Length: 389
Image (cartoon, rainbow, N blue to C red; front, side, top):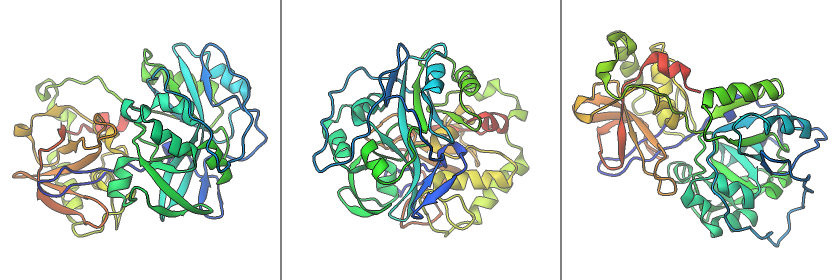
């Protein structure tokens, strides 16, 4: 959803409404709730599939940060869930009984205005949630201590491309928030993390999100199983979507890909936005981030694309750089906090050039293709793209 300068590594962003959950209400115009307040009977933040832990008591935020426990066993997150209302203990008991689930992490989720940007944010228990994040992020004791102390940690791409400078205090819901760390959480729908104490002082809804670890279960099957036990209206999205697809384009029929007229329409649509400002999280029609530009341009050709870069990465087979054709998508990995994360996308224009929305302060433009941190090239299949969630 974002771009790069010539001869420098492209950087990316990722903003998407929390799995397309309709925002229910707004507190002080700053915190958009993804659920409704009620009197929940919440389980604790960290839940194992063996047994639900005793209910936690909410501790008011104080000047002394609570200690963060050492990193334990790393968990492989599988899906991210957002519900419209706080999760009840009875529901969680059903969730942890779903076959293959090894652990579940409870969180508070809201879409929050930070420095004028709508940012999908989680309130978490730093001691337990860290185990679900990429290894580099999980191992940083200082990072989690800062979060426990009231700072907000934003993704590397939001910090760099979105202009949220490390150490800076920025307007947030109810006052200033300090950008205490750059830390990609490895979850496409999450761009910022605060402690649960901080989240609740800001008015977040309680216990309306969970991260599920079921590393040996097919993600699609897991999603279907969870939807059967979760409340109506719950949304479940794969954290790292993977589609089994042939690696070689020769194994695909020509009808699997966009037609010549569709490619022309998408390219012309994107080119028609040259000079429009880059805005982190924007989806058009007048401002864009990198994946927002891709989604909008391809929609003009009747192709339904997912919203964020790591989802667009799996919308078709990979091709070699030497085989790249206009309309293919070019991806980069440039996030040092999560080296495997797909952080930027551009549309191949041809003749060694890409059409992209680079970063804050820049505009939609055509620029030379940089191979630094290049992840690969994808030829979009409309059928596959429509299946990615």
